[in-house]
Image (cartoon, rainbow, N blue to C red; front, side, top):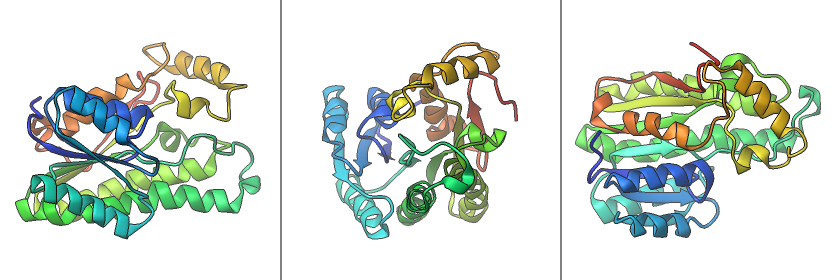
Length: 252
């Protein structure tokens, strides 16, 4: 899969899975714009240390003006955008419990980041992609939306929306030569999954591993191949699809 010279925008890239994506793209010669609501400078520095061209911008994806400004900065630097990875999401430390007790402000925040953020970034990237009649948008959903996981309704609903948006977006923007696909991860063993739930994460991780055909914990590196594939020309005739990456727990 050749990604040499491709201009890739990754949101939520200051740390965790987003930083892992950035490292993988950098190793393959992509040019990177990494963005996050917290300072993603270190991710860009690591990418440059791998020999890649990289920029970083603090961006709140809830705000269309900031999304537009970040894409505009990317185009000023490299002339176009080839790939957008909509990785930014509100997940770490979220309330888990009965749906009637979800704090309303937390519900609104989850929807603003996980749903409106995907819309804002995709809308911002569509113009430069359409101009070249080429581009790949990769959204990140969750197997919680496929399984109907209880006790986390706001997050599950937001990721269900991402899957639905992927399908509708693919039909709408295909005429511009832009592809839209979705990666659907299972429970990842990382800091974001543990934050606020340290007391029961190990138990949950064991339970998820036992559900998998490949019976082990899932790590950020397990997602990299799927994202690289959907960003590359190897998937040039694939759009509107959801690729589940969870070791074979969910087969859909």
